[in-house]
Length: 635
Image (cartoon, rainbow, N blue to C red; front, side, top):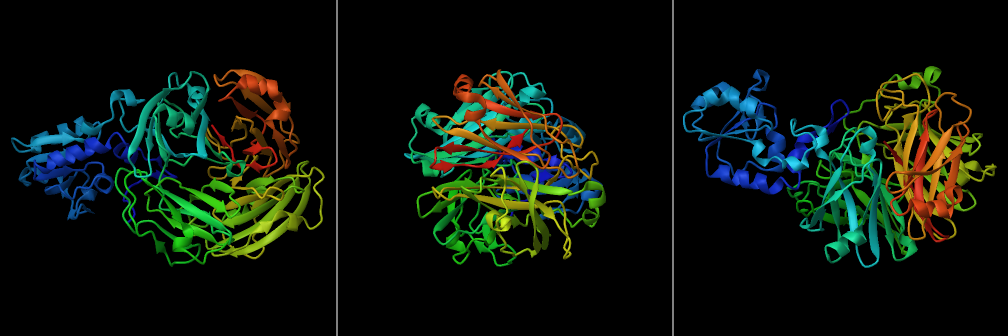
């Protein structure tokens, strides 16, 4: 029951076609087109680009009286789609069709090629009938230009005591965009559109804030819990809408944060934690398409198990449903982890953990790759790439927080995870190394950093960990090394968690696409990280880590640049981070209250370094009562 659509390929990148036919503004025109064609049959479907199956997956051809499926490529003749074998388009004259549907945008050239084959009186229609209006397009001359569909979804909620806030910046301006507009559509839990509006983004790299409370007041809405569709128009440089998402309540124990949803629906997600005995884990199933998710299409299973428990209910187009994991996997317990069978029905989902004490936190699983195979060269990279792939994460102050790591399989072919942990003081001094083992796919090995230190002190009081490959007991690797990181406040009982994957850091040698670069070819050896600022009495924390696969600059040369909402630079503070070290800081302490007040609501910090690649985590702090934490994004 997986959707037969192509969304993202690590070779081709993002696919714009599924976004073009699944856009909320296209749903009704597509339905009207198919309804009209149903009365003008038989219909010959001409599919020169191989788009019949993805279109049928989103907008079913089932009610259409078909006269045949026709193709242009000789190698596609005989291909099965729409319940029939594809015929050469040269057979069109004998098809008895009354209408020809050309499955293409910018289709005039394809129409011109076959006009002579269509019998007299046959009507030719194309997907250009369901194009978005010109004002919605960045590049009208090429409809499937990825920049025309710079879109994403965000979990969005506003209830009596729970709110959400999206924060980002007009980073497209840094790539030359002159005028950026956001088209926004808010969907309720039932998938119905609650509000639709536009927001102009200030020129320059200005801050952008969308607060659920403001939206609810503006449109006089009742309480809602659904998703916000964001379409950025006029962009360049990035076809992805990146953002930080804060979730907060009237009670501080509901403070949490996460980030963008990864705009391409995937077959599988992994790294969903099973609940503790006193917890409830809710997986937010949020439909990313204008077609319903059928009952049974979404499933969950314990990692490493083939026994899949299915959600026996449908989710309406663009609808949302909170799935209590215990309803399908009642015996699952932390540190077991859960695999999500998503069938490309949703972008990277959120999960919410509710504890018996009333504390809430939200995070996301990650895309589980289906296209990876073990790479036999990785074990031999050490002589050239040093530590090679590194997954860095904070060790928060050990006297206050428990820092926990759970390695998570993140590809369907990962049967083993041969991993070790290195622990570093903020000064860059290595404090301990622990071999976690050649872990099986179904492992339940979590590591609590305090126990691994085993009495060893971190002179700085905090530091960072690095999850690395370690092949002493064998095992295989593919470079897609992931883990979940959980942080628990020993005093308040509040917790936060985040997850991410490994990269090669700070080496001039390159291996495949590593060290990763945001712009241009690798290696990526500089830093540009976005840090949103807290409001309403919440301070901002940031943990910057300087990982290095091979020895690099002894100290970083890092600038913390405070910007106002309009993108103007207010002040800059220069800091140095030791190689293999880290820096944990708060905005109030680095910039002071006066400068932060000048930045105002929507102000932000740009972390910039041209000498090395840093990795960062950000969060908010509500006094001694609560905190949030997630990894940062760059652009």
